[in-house]
Image (cartoon, rainbow, N blue to C red; front, side):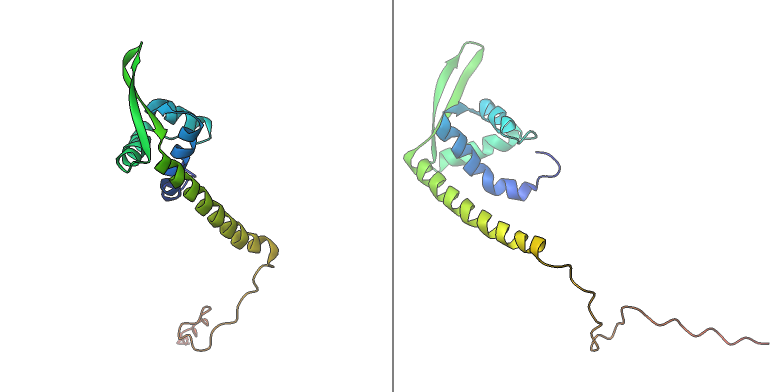
Length: 140
């Protein structure tokens, strides 16, 4: 992840992104990290993706199978289950709704004039612009 990405926002959408990529084609974990990089999440690490895969598998949203690899240990390939496809559909709908709401609220900033400076609140005991103190009387 790049420093300008909010990790909490990403945490909320990463399962949806993983399911979406797996809906395109099954993948093993490291390949999925690479696909996320290609999608623009260049700082994504296996340490972030594997816990999501494990949770999705535990919840029944993805299934896995081991495939022998000619260049090392067997790879665990993941694909969405019917429940995972339903979860993805729900997540896409929720994301679309949220995106519209966020865009609508942020668009107000573009359309609204800059706020005028506000008058001080007469009930506020702390003046925002304190009056200068009287100079000490001179002894001359």
